[in-house]
Length: 267
Ligand SMILES: Nc1ncnc2c1ncn2[C@@H]1O[C@H](COP(=O)(O)OP(=O)(O)O)[C@@H](O)[C@H]1O
Ligand SMILES: [Mg+2]
Image 1 (cartoon, rainbow, N blue to C red):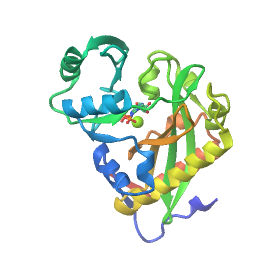
Image 2: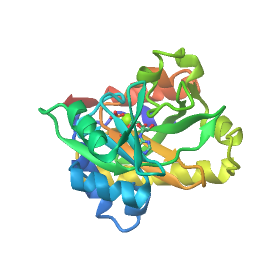
Image 3: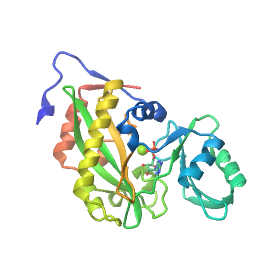
């Protein structure tokens, strides 16, 4: 396997950790091909919230420097001018003004927030799912190493992050192979074609981001909606490696570990 050669003579590769979602999304949104895979994203404001709800019926509010699904709010526009607001495990139905007040109250004043077009994720055993693709750059090429499908713990979970959902279900029931989840999806999705599309997208994103930033590993969050369209959520520059071990060939875990020995992480 290619990854066993060290980057001779060049010393450690300096990998930059960037937690700023907007900074990364901007690069991809500027790309005419990749922009079509990114849900519409803007800085949070009440005006944007109102506009997104009119346009998409569902909007997600999330911290620009978020982690593990914490602090994410979903707002749904219901018939008869009511709005459903979900955060953590709670769901409330309110009129527009009191929904806005609630959203504002939930925001941490010290943080910046994004607002995003809400996607209707495909489901497995009625629970929404999305994916993690782990790529490492070695000898100047991106390698797709490990991947997994993350299935939410409950049918109305607003995020699929494993750490977040393991409050309700053991991690073993939250992570599966992508092919299995696509093949057994509640929606009819062509598993092989979709998997290939996702893999291709992961390389395109890694190449584009790797051309702009000093990145040597990326944990890409990708998704498929109920219509079978694929999407990109975020690029994690400090992705967890260990939880992926279970659903991947141990060979790949070892390859990643070896590749990471050449990388110096800069925060
Ligand atoms: N626009 C959206 N539509 C539907 N689900 C979303 C949206 N944004 C985020 N999510 C859900 O929330 C999860 C966490 O969002 P993400 O942007 O990856 O932030 P974090 O840094 O907290 O992981 C995603 O994996 C997905 O399950
Ligand atoms: Mg994420």
